[in-house]
Figure 1 (cartoon, helix red, strand yellow):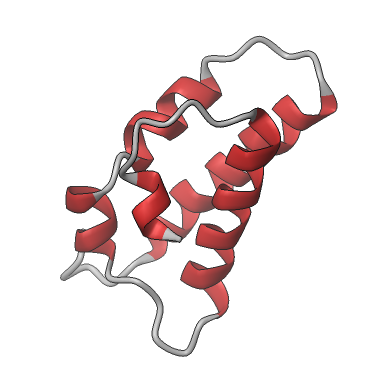
Figure 2: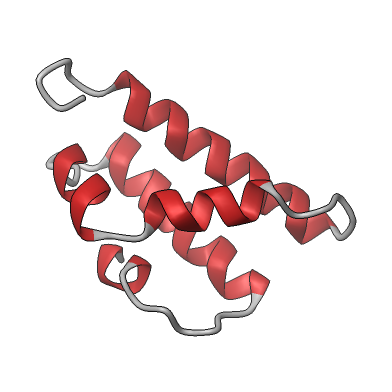
Length: 84
């Protein structure tokens, strides 16, 4: 899933939501979660999250995109101090 976060494809909001949800689930529940340094240095996840958080409220999907974005930020912040 992380490889999808490196592309600059024009994804629909539903596709973005599916990717963010999968990334968040991998970070939180996988036995071998992705390395935080890899997420931060080899993907556009922070840029994507920044763009999503700047969206105006509106559609329900926008609210879910923001929720997943915040959840990923929390998971990143919770990482090992060696990773941050």
